[in-house]
Amino acid sequence: QVDRRGQAQVAVPATLVAAGGVLALLLCVRLGAPDWALFVAYLPTAATPNTGGMSRARWAHLLKDDPRALHTANSFEQAVDELCFMLGPVVAAFLCSALFPEAGAVVGVVLMVSGMLVFAAQRATQPPARPRTRTTRTPLRAAGMPPLLVAFLATGAIFGSLEVVTVAFADAQGHKAWAGVVLALQAAGSGAAGLVYGTLHLSGPAARRHPRCVAAMAALMTLPLLTAWGTGSLYALGGALLVAGMATAPTMVTGMTLVQQRTPEGQLNEGMTLAVTGLLGGIACGSAAGGAAVEHWGPTAAYTVPVTAATTALLLALYGYARRTR
Image (tube, rainbow, N blue to C red; front, top):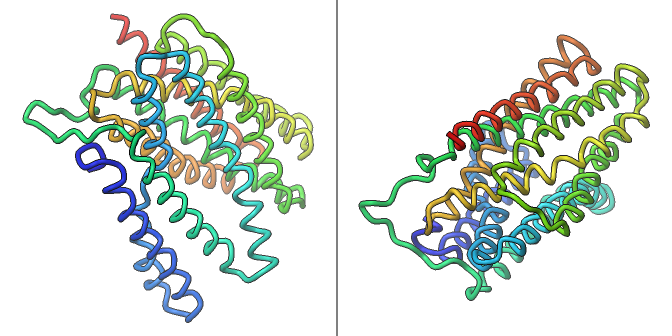
């Protein structure tokens, strides 16, 4: 719908619907509503628009004739994502403890709505609406897209499992309160790497760089496992996550660049949304797998889950590159 009608026309109403769902949930909690009402109230939040994907679609539209500038813009977007990942939980926790329990969610809703209104007001930068025709095909059928999207699914599983396992490891060490700080180090490493990566003048196609970035991510993702197994120290684990995160942003930036290149013209928002959906689906699967591994193997051995997910992402990236080359 965003590609067909335009970002502002679809995203603003969707954001208001999602905000209503959050407020309804908070009201149910405050009034002590039954558990089933909480799930029903939260359903409208599924309408939350993919702001990151829309922003990247704008960059791809504005800089389609300047690959170097588009690379820098994508790197900046990834660094901002990591910054939000670092600051969001900290700010929410402070608001909830300093003001009232629902303060974090209320401020989040205000920021979401106001941010979307400001974003949608920039009509000059949004890609033009392209009504569907009989020849329009889904980006899922574009050459090279299926294996790339499945690789995003595996990459999301890394993030989901890493978060669950790290919280469990910190809890086992008696420092659960520090789990957020340790995870923020991984995001900090990724954000810093994203900024540096954006300044590089890279040669060669993104399709060739992508398997290399995923290979680096898979190699560095063994560091948390080896550190947890060898030292059992939460502080050492934080350093390992900081280093491991440095391959995340280059991988995400290169992957998103490939999505932009392979998505048919006029369907950028749909293509970016498919990539983010794959990523979020992988996070959910990774969280479930990580939780099961913690229960059965313990938090240290459970770090094999993100390593396995990273190896799977590498195999998929190599398969996609080989198929594309043929």
